[in-house]
Length: 102
Image 1 (cartoon, rainbow, N blue to C red):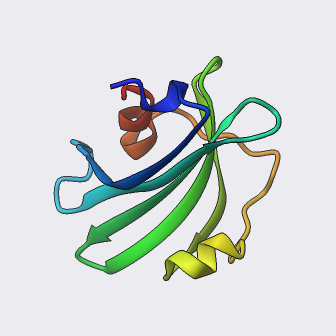
Image 2 (cartoon, rainbow, N blue to C red):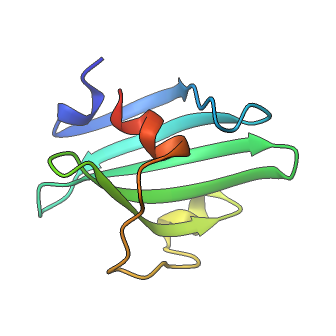
């Protein structure tokens, strides 16, 4: 599946397998290409602590990621609730490693 290569995609909730978080399920709700060429991914996590949403910026070339927003509802993420540090990229692992494998 070449999800991250598409310039603009609206998905009907695509499930992502995350072996490092077996008690939760993850859905990719939306992706889109950013002006800088990176991909924006909005996802939902449904686990023992409840449902949460996050927005990530993905650099496919360097295989790095960063959270740009997190929240309890899709609309809170769209508004940028709990914005994250714009300069911090995550190390690969967990959901992010599963995401880059798509």
